[in-house]
Length: 221
Image 1: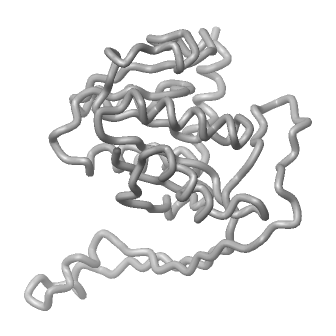
Image 2 (image 1 turned 60 degrees about the vertical axis):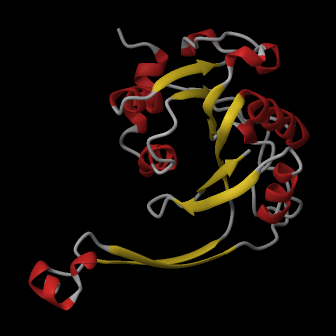
């Protein structure tokens, strides 16, 4: 009989948001060959860990939910500095706690990271996107058009104030979001500025074009 995590996991792979795994890995791989050890905060069903280990990274996880079988079943503040990692990441985790608590979480992540902090959070915005795929016969290398063979997305995205700051917190079938970027009190500019105060510098920011509800941030200590 399937466990709850296995059952939900089989449903997850059928949804567009599952493509976000690729961009979690993109954030890690594009750091280059230097990073080896990674601490993932809130591993969920373990997709990121499974794929990152295949790619040669040493992954440790921390979570308060024993069902997720974390390596560290404790509050992140209890980890000693000797547990430092090259990269500390949290994907779609911070929004499940009040905003000020999420900033405290990032401070702890920064404390444990030797260099990199990777984060993804949900964002509300207007989006208009077009995917362009051109046949190979029209993208001859001699014309310098080979880069179009993999397809490109052309998009216009903009944040806008929302009437409500908070999503519904009374749902019982999922862990609620306490905040989301793009809502009235949480513009992404504020988020970046607040994390900068934690001793971080924004190096890169990008979107999953197939599920642009998720925004990715690459920070360096």
